[in-house]
Structure formats: C-alpha cells, structure tokens
Length: 128
Image (cartoon, rainbow, N blue to C red):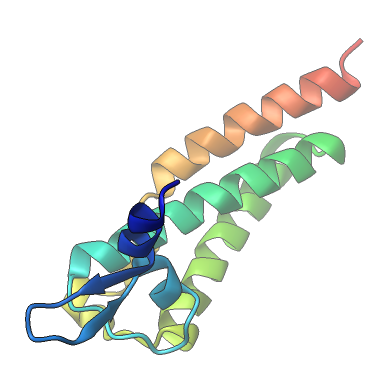
C-alpha cells in the first residue's frame, strides 16, 4: 500500500479544513458522531459478520448441535449489537427507525454465514 492510499484510508480532509475520522476509528471509539446514517449501519452489518464467523468456528470446534446452538447464536448476536449501539455508541435509535431496525440490520446474512462456518468446522472436525 502506498503512502498516499494509507493517508486516504486513515484520514479524510473536509473542504473546511477540518479532519474527519475514518469509519473504523469511529466504530471503536465510544459515543462517536455519525453524520452519515449508512456509515453506522455498515459498521453494524460488518460487526455482525465478524460475530458470525467467530461463533461459527467456536460452535464447530465445541460440538454444539441443533436448536440450542442456533438459539444461543441469535441471543449473542442480537445482544452484543444491542449493547454496542445503545450503551457504547449511545446513538438515538429513532434516527435509524427504532431499536428493532438496528437489531435486525444484517442479521439474516450473518445467520447464513454462521451456519456455513458452523457446518464446515463441525463436519471437518467431528464427522467420521
């Protein structure tokens, strides 16, 4: 990666001379200000995907099966993201259509990814 592309990724300069933080630096900083609503929804979406991969690997290594594994995934996935946007970021849920809209943002794709990763790891490690 060149020096100029690193700089573009890390810091974007505004026309008024101010400095805008990158999306990922805002994602890991508490109580960030999100000018663009889609930017925050993208962060929620990608956090869900990371959670899905991590839990899929854990569920595949620890031979969890059936409804219990699915139910625990749903609770953890929804719970972690709810705590993230309500306590860590402290966003106004109504700006994004309510708590339910933020809770379900990207859920089905993360659920599908979780199932694929879980099945692959479980089959590779525990199937004879």
